[in-house]
Image 1: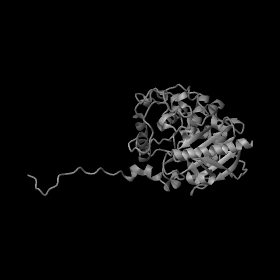
Image 2: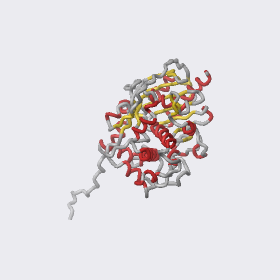
Image 3: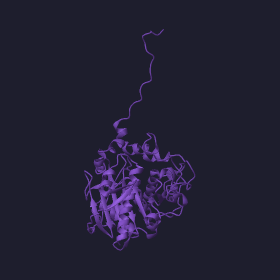
Image 4: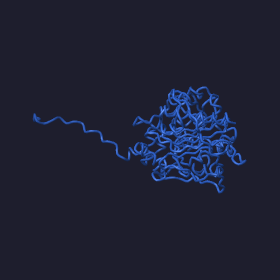
Length: 397
């Protein structure tokens, strides 16, 4: 018989997550992320993306951009943009010249390599375009399992390279960062905690037929990067160096950070780090149809393919719940439609931008340290301001 003074047993409280489990959240919080986004090579293993022997300094022609943009009924200055959207670096190139440059980030400067997050996806696309042109990848309709047999029997087995480039694999759920057991959170924890990253991706379920609808997916780009590595027979960082970075005339080597667990892997969907000026050089390549100093580095048709898509589900406003209404998508780039000349942009969480307007001959790099991964209001305000700058130079031509 139980004593009347005894209390019934209660379930033990769930064990709180350890620092090791939560490190991804901790290093991305403000104000810590101002430091972490400039020191990823202190936190994770890395692999160098070597620049070439030839350095081509960017011509400098400073302009005082005393202009305003209209957002939510108010005229705002660029100083307000930087304050309201936590800018860390800001570089504007027009006509091949740096016309405006600003480094408000606490740890930022012209030689600081910034964590670019998903702007890396757009770089992966350029590398895939090169591999297709050179024959390392046979065609857009090759399947994942043709290059990665370990994906046989998974939802990715018959997904094509074309599907991956359009974020239409049909694999995985909505990519959300505020749900603890979401696929992207398990992916992050495996990267930083020494888990099996490939196993996380292979376990992703099929949610719709491939090619049917857009669903933003870091998994898709990670698989694309693995396909590229298998096709090229070398790591992503080495391929990026040999085929792209060494031709840019870059100021500095870039680097990818790698998974903790071996075999270590670059994150083609989010681990490239480079200076703002060197990222602007990539934008200049896009403005110039893939040409750098007279050399066709990226195929011209591939660059033009990145400006827009003729698929209705990828048109501006048609992306559904995983894309803001002011964007379309094409070839791992976010498109902006005819309302903004033929502008398009690479995007990364926490406010990273590589904005390219071919018609205006404008490239803008903005890196940021937002307090959250995604923020539609900050994004919409940023794009409004970048469009205003491009319009200013387009009118002045």
